[in-house]
Image 1 (cartoon, rainbow, N blue to C red):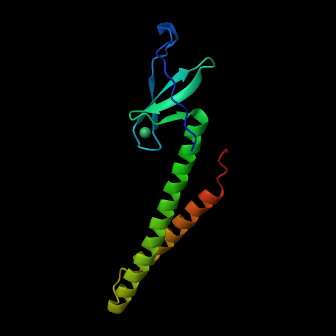
Image 2 (cartoon, helix red, strand yellow):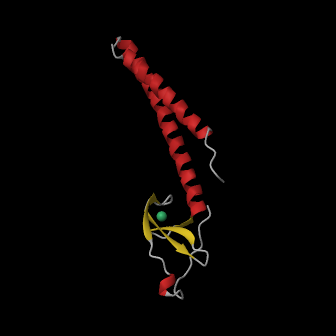
Length: 129
Ligand SMILES: [Zn+2]
């Protein structure tokens, strides 16, 4: 993951300093609050969190895309595990002829469809490199 190099502003005149501003984004590494400021002669946008993880706009997007993919795979895994657990539960209900079986079958179908939808979302994503 590319991170912006730290820059010192010790020699910058006060008028060249831009006040850091909070943004409604969390740090992909630690989930801390991000703020942004502009640095350098080209005034590049730099995001920085409370523990000094630093990102350019491109590296922040790259990190957020990776975070999104991990989160979606995590949800797909949870739904897959729920499907197995519901199938086991359904097997138990069949032994006692419990009348909740149709509800459990409906939920198994929902979970299967939700898992497929998430996998489709992951496969349909074309993040900018
Ligand atoms: Zn951070």
